[in-house]
Length: 254
Image (cartoon, one colour):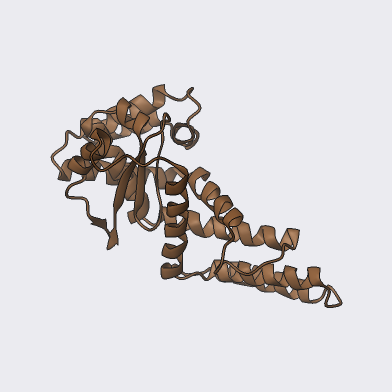
């Protein structure tokens, strides 16, 4: 379980104290207190709880999108490339394809990795294996878990502001789950996170018999797609350094 900084514990404790001092026991006060407790719970969420939230988010996304069938050329291609990629740091991997006309890919803390069919159409096998490895890197390095925690904290903080009725993060409503999914998928990774994921993707490519140049060409292709409005590409371009600079970094390391 990730350690909680005392700075954040103190801030949350002071927030709870401020709520308690607001006066009489009206319903808004009690719901605000509930939100404060949700904030504390989000900050201290265990790894097991994190996995449960990630699984719920992944299931919600799978219901909203069309998964490639097991017999489709897309899923067979992914299965062939990822035949030796069963888990990362003890987290089982679930790598599947969304049949969607969008350049996108993402990973969740529970090992869920989803690749969009249009992205697959744009990449050769080495480049696609790098993308898969890159997403694995976000799981292996804890980036996806950090993003989930941040989304839960944001959600709990919003509950305090809005004084919304309801329980804690232990039982998310469908609306809250949808909001959580959107935050987790759309949040940007830091420069350090992206470099770590790039390095992990390159290592994955090398260890599985791929041409390491594919790591560079994958990023170079993404750099040329920056005007297509894809969230995945937007994240890649918005996170410094840009994909072209990251590709140059990888080429230098080859």
